[in-house]
Image (cartoon, rainbow, N blue to C red; front, side, top):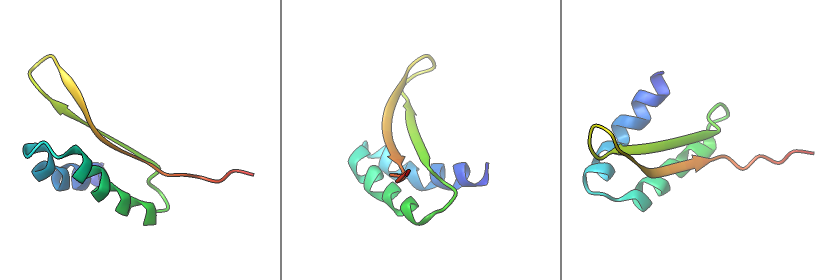
Length: 63
């Protein structure tokens, strides 16, 4: 829960400015984390509609 709050707070400026690509670049910093593998951010457009905004998916090599 703490990580989601931190990621959400840091994404606010990009969301307000509708800069999804900028936020995806910001999320790349999560590659250094050993415990975060996937982040998906959705923007609420109105009370019934969400819009995919940005994501991060760690590339994991599996043998």
